[in-house]
Length: 278
Ligand code: HEC
Ligand code: HEC
Ligand code: HEC
Ligand code: HEC
Ligand code: HEC
Ligand code: HEC
Ligand code: HEC
Image 1 (spheres, helix red, strand yellow):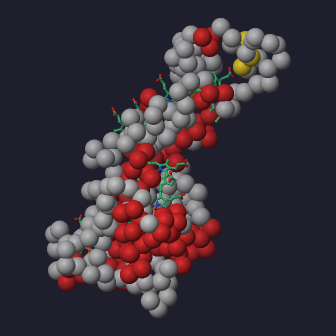
Image 2: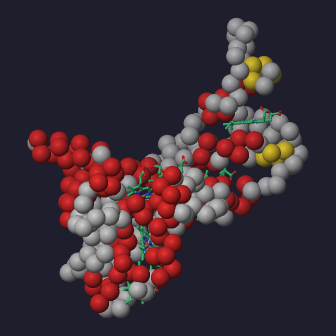
Image 3: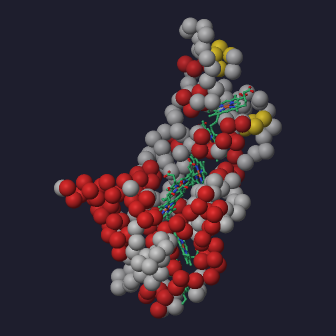
């Protein structure tokens, strides 16, 4: 019991530990322990029967482009430096690569997380539970992948996200798609241009939506007017009346949500109504 408590503490800190730990062996042990004690579902790290770890520099021979850009990637930090550290960067997601290398890239000799998100869940287990919520992007269903919205090899892992200090030190962080651009690739109608924009969108889709998943329809962060009052809050002075944008909304709020009561149905922007009604 003591042992597993300790492991749990380790697991809470495991991202930090990844930076300071030396050696792929201890890294694998920690990951294995984390994945077996924090959940009933056992998630083995990506593995290829019979293969051993060879280190990222081996991959450079044949995958020159990816290796060249990789230092700019968020996950490049997984390449722990040092004598003992077996330069685990590529193989932390792709699994041990020895058979792949000796077979010159033979089929089924390496894990491709583009085909299954399990490789990501070894370290981001909490993200999986989000995708199990009632409203979610169909990643676990295999209709899209983590890499639809995340860069594994280059720049910020959150496409269009801010680049970290570390990345700019290493010299990466080229201007990427803004975060909304990622969403527009598939949700083209939200791009506009709109005659009447909703400025909320400039803060990003994620101010209202949880793209991994949510208990609320449309993956909304809140199911009612709370969603909108985050920004449209106004100090109330008249008892019994609720003012929003200087208009008394007391009666409106009983009819439904701000966007379903027939008042602001075009929350993403409108061509005809400044009040985002149609
Ligand atoms: C001797 C050359 C060679 C080396 C070294 C090599 N690869 Fe490959 N790799 C290939 C070839 C060839 C393919 C198949 C064609 C392609 O997709 O480019 C491939 C494909 C892949 C794929 C896609 C597999 C799939 O099923 O879609 C991944 C992932 C991959 N390599 C990762 C790695 C990693 C990680 C390393 C270092 C551990 C590495 N490779 C080292 C030659 C190599
Ligand atoms: C954060 C996890 C992660 C790391 C670290 C990582 N990859 Fe990948 N790799 C992926 C994902 C995800 C895909 C699938 C991309 C897709 O389907 O769009 C992929 C795909 C590939 C492919 C198949 C071709 C392609 O672009 O789809 C190759 C080759 C590859 N990776 C090589 C490497 C090499 C070499 C390194 C180290 C320099 C590396 N990867 C590091 C996650 C990772
Ligand atoms: C070996 C462990 C490991 C694996 C495997 C892994 N990650 Fe990560 N990931 C990390 C760590 C550690 C960080 C950095 C966390 C930090 O800086 O706070 C990170 C950061 C991220 C971030 C950025 C978080 C932020 O706030 O900027 C995203 C997005 C992400 N990972 C997605 C993925 C995806 C998608 C995959 C699979 C293709 C994957 N990761 C595989 C360990 C891992
Ligand atoms: C539909 C787009 C989309 C998909 C698919 C997606 N993500 Fe994300 N993810 C995002 C966005 C956007 C953010 C940034 C959230 C923010 O800034 O609040 C994010 C943030 C993250 C983070 C850092 C913050 C956090 O929530 O922990 C991690 C780690 C991550 N994603 C992992 C994954 C993994 C693993 C997968 C695949 C199982 C995945 N994501 C699939 C859009 C997506
Ligand atoms: C690779 C394509 C793709 C990308 C990129 C993408 N989505 Fe989606 N989105 C989908 C698919 C597919 C569905 C599911 C539609 C369904 O279930 O009928 C969906 C559903 C949604 C829904 C719920 C729609 C509904 O009718 O309930 C919202 C909200 C959403 N996405 C927002 C986002 C946001 C925000 C981003 C960017 C962080 C994003 N999407 C990026 C493909 C994508
Ligand atoms: C101010 C909050 C807010 C912002 C910001 C926002 N949305 Fe929405 N979104 C909503 C609400 C509310 C609904 C539900 C509308 C309904 O059910 O009639 C919704 C519904 C959706 C839907 C499903 C229904 C439809 O209209 O297709 C998609 C897809 C979607 N949003 C994508 C996005 C994308 C992509 C972004 C970023 C460009 C974004 N949203 C930004 C509030 C917002
Ligand atoms: C991230 C902050 C933010 C959120 C969340 C947000 N808004 Fe807005 N909204 C703004 C800003 C900024 C403006 C433009 C300045 C203003 O008029 O207050 C605006 C303007 C509007 C307008 C136009 C007002 C006018 O007549 O000029 C309407 C209507 C509106 N929002 C409705 C909504 C609804 C409905 C929601 C919830 C689905 C919502 N907003 C959520 C920031 C936000």
